[in-house]
Image (cartoon, rainbow, N blue to C red):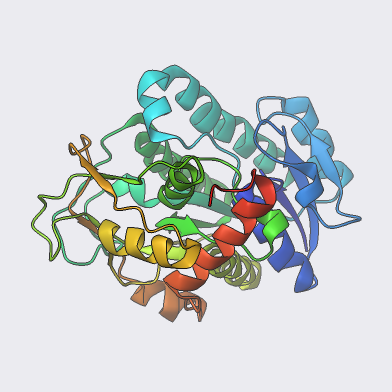
Length: 326
């Protein structure tokens, strides 16, 4: 098979490309490089630079590279920004997906793997989030992911396309420093950014009904996430006809924000006590995945610890940013 990976030069995308190519899969990448970095890609991987909204480009790419499966990662994914710019998020995340699926159907592609998110669940009050937990997103980003799942499944049913929707929890770490997350939008890079500037890390809310008063989250190493994509791609490739698989991807273990801050302090050697600020609207008390379905259906399980995530992320941060203060 030949897989088109949209957003393949991004932080997660580059890890997926690495996992799939190391397993011998043929890969071509489509990325507009708005946040992706071409240098993340292995030598020899075809890179098509362009937008999902460019139907002609999609048609040429799918037919020219004889694509037989798509891994769709490209999307805008900043929650706060989605609240401020909902039209942009619906246009790029949902309309872009519509254009892509139109091209996929026209080209006769029969495998489609969709990057979704735990944001589809909103703020469920459950110990473990299963795939049957009601999906009630609370921001435009989560809405576009849930509507994207609906669209992917409906298209799959109508056109006998085998589809998969992978609901990521909190992604962190790096397989190699050059593949690390260079943005400051997720909690671990946000902690790094504060300590690198000699400022105390921030914790939003310490009065939640948890053991230490801070939110509890499920973190997954990006390498484990990439391997889950490979397992899901193999699952779709082996299917005949349509059918959908929707699974959570996490470790199934909760880590509190305070525990994470303590681990970051230990790994970096910067032991400045965090400052406690007001709760942020929409933050769930606890969001931890049930991963039984992913293990059973994909034969996959996360292998890396939270410490490995922080250590590898810190190594990458130091490579990409100025030296931190003593």
